[in-house]
Every structure is written in structure tokens, then in C-alpha cells.
Length: 397
Image (cartoon, rainbow, N blue to C red; front, top):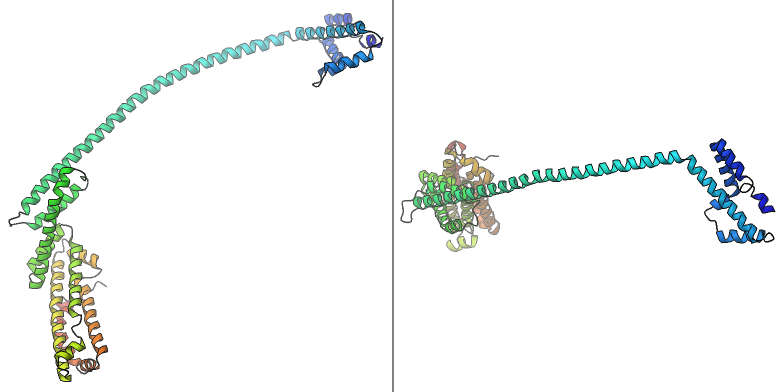
């Protein structure tokens, strides 16, 4: 039969395979593997279908009968089994080595896992040994910092209350106050009370401190203003000392000079109104000229008097070189006090005179024709203010 002839490897060649395997196992095994692969390669296919194969073989061998077909399949199965046994016997040592290597690797992995667990346990213990003291030290440090802050706050509060009592003693309500020392105490209170907001005893005392501060600064302003009007350098120096001790000298001096400027501008405004001068002169040209020169002379006297006040202030400031009073005032005003006031005062007077000349031709004629008289009125009165040799206007520019 054709099937029996095609299966010589499985029937008649079985004893030969065994004999050759006993004499040369490696060669016989390789030949058997090659024959098996050539004969039964279709069984190794990934898309092998047993039903299709059985139908195909059954149709081809229908004439031989089912019995012969079953015998052929059994012979093929025996050949496959013998090849598997041969392969296993040949690779037995290698398989044992691989199994031994796997066991060794498994044992090594077990040891590594055990060591990892030990390391984790040691790390946990080490973490506990480090973390617990660290957390305790951090807590103690926080407590120490809070205690230090509380101690500093208590000390500052005690210092503030001491300064508040000193301020009340230096500025009694009945008189005899020492405002210069009180100004120094006010500066100390400002430094101490900066971080005490929210402390009830401090907040309660701040109202009295503010009232005494206002009283001290008002006294300094009174001394400076009164001394300037009376030409009393001692009062001006005393007032400036109070302002300096209180830390308010630059702003206070600038405010004083600006106030003098504003007052002078308000004093000049409308003084040379042509309608008012004509009404006072009864509409007479000669009377208008006399009224004009009278008012100009009064303005020149006022300009000289007020300039002398500002000059006195600048002189007193310049005497205190150690405290740099004048430098502080210049930094605030941008120029020396007298130069700052003089520029604005002359500008206000010139603007008033220009407005009068522009409104009335009679006034303009009187000013032009009497220019020499205008110079005689202004120059003697303003020379002390204009001459640097006499302590007059000196600008920093």
C-alpha cells in the first residue's frame, strides 16, 4: 500500500533507528529529527486543523480501510514518542543543569529578598531614631522661639510703659514741660511701639501719647513762628530743636516756608487792583499815582519784613552744622529756604504788578515813568535779602 510505503520510518525503520541510536546516539537522533521534520512538518504548522487532516487522509486511503489508517496513525505516534524520549535522554544533563541553575537563582533571589527585608527594617529603625529626635528638637526650637518672642514683647511693653510715664512727666498738664526731651521720648516710643500693635495696654496708652505728640509739635511750631515774627533767634532754635528731636524737622521746615509763601501770595493778591486804587484816589491821575506808589512801598516793606523772617530761619538752621539742619531742609525743599521763598514771592509780586499794568494804562504809565522811584523803593529794603555778603539769597543751584 502506498501509505505503508510512505511510513517506512515508523514501521520497518524502527529497529534500525534504535540500533543506530545505541551505537551513535547523537547522529541517530539528528537523523531521526530530520526525518521527522521532513515527514511530519505539517503537524508543526500553527494553523494545523486535525479535522481537515483526518478527512483528507480518510478520503485518500478509503480503499485500504479504517483499520489500516488507524494503524498508520498509531505508528506515527510511536515514532513521535520515541523521538521525544531520545531528545529528552540526549538533553538530560543540560536540563538538569538548567534546573539546578534555576534553583540557585531562586535561592539567591530568596536571600536577596530576605536582605531587602532586613534593610527595610533597619531603615525603619534608623528613620525612627533620626525622626523622633528631630521632631522633638524642632518642637523645642519652636517653643524656644515662641518664648523668646513673648519675652521680647513683654520687655518692649514694659519699655513702652516706662517711656509713656516719662513722657507724662516731661509734659505735665499744669505747665513746666520740657518739650525738647519729650520729643526725644516720642522718637523712642515710635521705635518701641512698632511691633506692639494689638497689645491692649499699648493701644490704650497710644491715645495719650498722640495727644502729647500733637502738643509738643504745636509748641515747636509756635516757637518757630513766633521767633520768626519777633526776630528772636533763641525761640526759633528751640522750636527747631524740638522738631529735630521728634524726627520732623525737614517736613516741618518745608511746611513753614511753604506757608510763608502762600501767606505772601494771599497778601499780594488784589493789592494793586486799578479799580480799587482809582476809587481811593477819587478818579484823579495824580491821586492814582500816589496811591500806587504808596501801595508799592507797603508791599516792599512787607516783602522785606517777611523775607527777614525766612532769612532768620535759614540762619538758625545754618548754625547747627552738627545736626545738618540746613541740609535736611534743602533736601525737602530742593533749595535753601530763603531762595525758595524769594523766587515765589517775587513772582507773585511781579504777576500782580503785570496784571495791574495790563488792566490800566494809567497804572502802566505811572510805573514806566516812575521806574527810578520803583528802584529806590525796592533796592534799599531788599538789599539785605539780595546780598550774599549780608546773608541774603543764596541758591544751591
